[in-house]
Image (tube, rainbow, N blue to C red; front, side, top):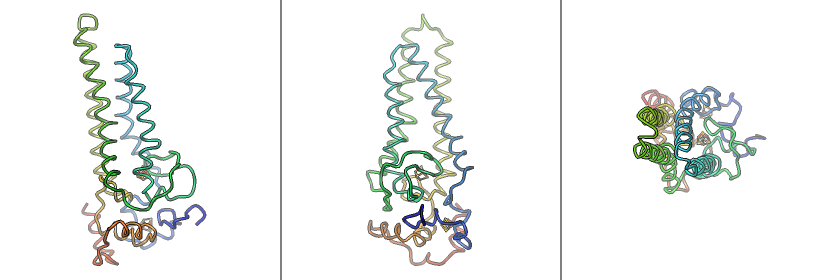
Length: 244
Ligand code: SF4
Ligand code: SF4
C-alpha cells in the first residue's frame, strides 16, 4: 500500500490478480515489452521529422521552426499531456514524482492524480496533440523546405528536392503507422479508459471500475453509469475482449 495511496489494482501485488477476468486481457500491469513496443512505433516518426527539419534548417538557414517544434514537443509530452491525459490514468496513481507506465515512462509527475474521466476539453486536446505533433507541424516545415527548393532549383537541383520529398513521405508513413498501430493494439487494452482513442469495451471498463473504488466514485460523480448486467459476468467480459 506504501506506493499505492489510492489502492489501485494496477499497483497491487500480482497475487491480487488471480482469478480476475481481465488478467492478460488488459494492459493493466507494467510490462517492459509493451513499453519497448511503444518506443518502437513512436521513434520513427519523431526521428524522420527531426532529420527532415534539420535538413530544411541547414538549407534555408531558417531555424526557428525547429526550435519551436522541439520546445513544443518537450512541453507537450513532458508537462501538458501529462496533465490532460496521464493524470487521469491508473498508472499515474502510483506514489512518487516519476511516472512509471507503458508510454510516457520517466516523465515528471508535477500534477496530482485525478481519478475522474477526461472532460471534453481534455479529449479535444488529445486529438490536437496528435494532429499538431505528428502531422501539422512537421508537414508545414517539409512543405516550406520543398517550396524553397523549387524556388531555388538552380542552386540545389533535383536530387535535393527528391531527397526531401522522400524524407517527408517516410515521415508521413511512419506517423500514420504510429497512429494506426497505437489505435489497434494499444488503445484496445489501455486502462486510461476515458481517453478518446480508447476502445476497451464497456463491460471490461465496468469490471475495472468495480475493482477500484476511488475511480468508480469519481466516474459516477461525472455522470458515468455502470451496467448492472456486467457485474460478475466474467465469461462474457473475457469473450468481448477476445473478440475485440
Ligand atoms: S484489472 Fe486489476 S486485478 Fe484485474 S488483472 Fe488487471 S491489475 Fe489485476
Ligand atoms: S495515459 Fe498512457 S502515457 Fe499516460 S500514464 Fe497512462 S499509460 Fe502512461
